[in-house]
Image 1 (spheres, rainbow, N blue to C red):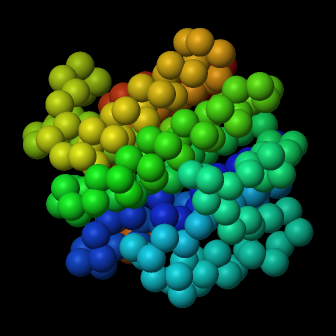
Image 2 (cartoon, one colour):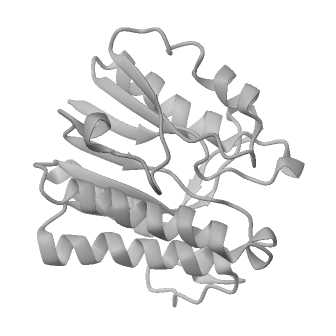
Length: 213
């Protein structure tokens, strides 16, 4: 299996939390894939929300490995053809995080969370993928992000609203073009030494369906 994933600038927590979600999710995902014998392609456009030196450190352990290829590319405008060549599974972790900041720069959140997702889905819709895994957020549920998959979707910030729109795009591409979209709304992510990663029950349900397929 050859896997494509956006490594960092993805599901990043506020710098004030001292948690490195990019390290935990993106680079740890690649480490696991490489350890299992898969090839992986990583992409980042290095938006300055997160220091580039930290992102570079996150991938340093596998950047030179022969089964890994890194592309500095912006999903919002770049040509994705080369990066997706030969890929059969996509983990779309890319997003612009931050609830409070999303009120002051809506265009940035709209382009990173919606436009980037649309362009990636469009690039994938004619490809024979086994899965398009779209990482979402508990912010799509609103202020009280608790409960199960029956919890009403009620985002209360531009961040949550743009992430919910991205979810809908992924599902729309599944319905219209057969893109094998899977939505995983992540509820809490922390660094490896700071505790567990929490996901909603909706995520577990989808993962179970994937394991049976």
